[in-house]
Length: 271
Ligand SMILES: [Ca+2]
Ligand SMILES: [Ca+2]
Ligand SMILES: [Ca+2]
Ligand SMILES: [Ca+2]
Image (cartoon, rainbow, N blue to C red):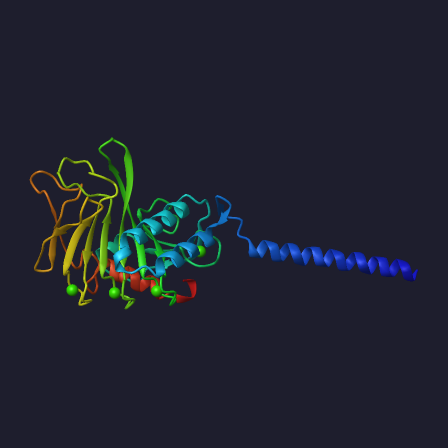
């Protein structure tokens, strides 16, 4: 009788141990992997590798975070961790008033945001991926979806925009058109690696300098009175360059992207 009780106790303890272990294993692993690496590790490693990169290495930072963007974009999980009416006003937000934060890798923290017409809308093109490079709990690097453009080889290429807060003061000071540049104005992108970079180097909210990178040598773009003329695929022969100012690139207060950054950063507990 005693032996039976001891055996039963042992079985009970073993069963409890197995249950506890499997709970622990399940909670440690999201199961979302890419090439056998956990998605959250891919993001963490990318941030660790680019966080120490200075301004000189901005192109490699861009490439690294683009890689994370496409891996996450192709991952199946779309876990909404916040969804509500936007706190922002203005024409853009009236069209897409629902603000959503999405966890793509299952670590409970937001990797993506979107603005959509309704809560059920799954096809909103107004979305981007977010990074906190200096790990202060605030987003300082945002990659916004652009759309598809045609390459010289007549292949589709998905381009995007990078918005960067390089001095971590919660305001963007670098804007990148990443992959929709058409320097010879033939209606096709010259090279998907060519990007236009626009800078506010003294952080006063106004554009100071700009250049094309990804060309043989950097090509400076003139800045006149807080505006630059960018040769993008969206222009035509009559209007060969797109005139953009500090509001367009998200530098000045109340610009759409400043407001987006503020809204994302107001959800500190989800970042
Ligand atoms: Ca996450
Ligand atoms: Ca940050
Ligand atoms: Ca800044
Ligand atoms: Ca400036």
